Length: 142
Image (cartoon, rainbow, N blue to C red; front, side, top):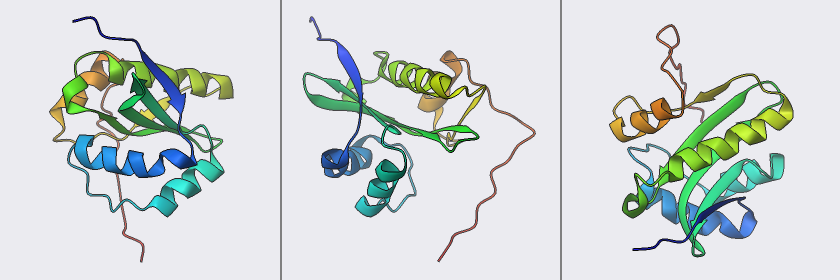
């Protein structure tokens, strides 16, 4: 079967509903309570942060490539289960790294669940390693 090329673009406000639906189907092990307003805030603060991979006009992957002016953060890498192992995750990571390079970032960090073995392979293949000296500390805000 001859598949068409996958392209990556920045998400925009009209993508939010589709992105939230996509994350329910494609994001592994998420504990997030996604809210359209939070995605609006992300895009208003950083209009190029949400990367969307498309094939034939259909969303097949996402990655948030957040730049806070100091650090480059990657999270919400999700690829449609029917399109995995085709390089879409790697393509999104590459697009994010190119974005960060334009800001002069010297390192990126990725939020990856410990139990998400599928994601570990993608991140490892892209040259990322788990840092044993760091742990994530969280506090729910009310």
